[in-house]
Length: 478
Image (cartoon, rainbow, N blue to C red):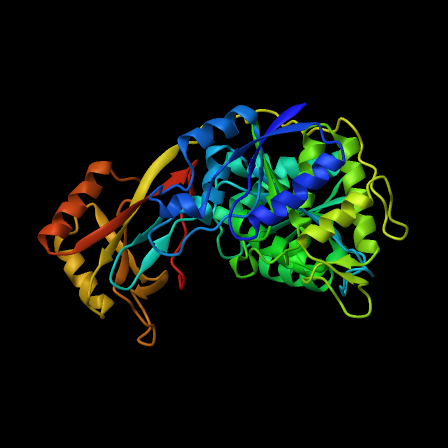
């Protein structure tokens, strides 16, 4: 008997959780449950995280959480509890299977069968945002080598374990050469360790277009957090409905299972929601905790129910669907089909004892790191970059020179274009005249002199070389 934590969430959450739990009980799942309350109610009661310390304790004790969708209130600076949970619990891998149920669920792509492996802890979802000037806000994109190595290796191990033939990487490293470039680089390195598995890389925009147009070309896709979030919803909708898809969030100690969709408050309490996404999450949970026979029974009964034409309103199609049912009635139909298998859709046969165990991350030897310059970001209300350059040069130390000024990343000095629109957010780049290195104290000196000249320095970014290689982006237009 395995003790798990459940959270019924907000909106349609309680309805689909009750439906899912009824199926788990009827199928003989060997689980006991501890229920916690999380989400909107706690947020609105003044709990800024949307979860209590007691609930955290229960989750960490049981290690397994089955969670229905929750609502994060708009405004008020509330942070997504979904993101918080993934990061606090170290749930680095998000696994979202998407499979066509044609001809029983309408889709233009009957041969679709994809596993999307999404990095789950970093990228823009680090949640580090600032307003820096009257006109400009920023969001920091953080990509780490350990994060890349864990998720890419997980994708290849998943493909190896489940007999998948190809792993595809999506990035945007033609633009983000440092962050997405690292992800692509690590993918190439790890792919060499799996010569039996085909590998390929696509730029995310054309890759997403191909996914929507020809999903049968893909098998396992691995990508970073934001891209994975977007393309997994695209894939689910292309297959028929986001209401059909579940996801697993896997960490070294804990795991969280859920539907990929939101809390849909506009249909809450009306017995309209499709519980399939959470059912699929529960099936993933059962395989994770070793109860593969029960998972197999539920999945085949679910496929049989879809095949029999018992469809909720999101996938109901006049003429091909046979019964338009509500949340409760759908779960009852699944329960009646326990022990049965689909006739046309391929039945599942989950292998027993399959577990993905990754080696502990081994930190690479440190490279020679040299401070090669600094970018000073400034809030300045002027419009002429030549005027700003003249002001900066008045206090610039002799050891450095001003190599460029950019505005929103585009170079506007020297040799800028008059047509370039400029906001009040400027970046001045300083490098040593002797092309060697600078001392950290010089950066402090620069900032102090900027203050005395009434220039508002809102941020600094040190420019480093690692083993002699520049590790920073150039300004667009250079």
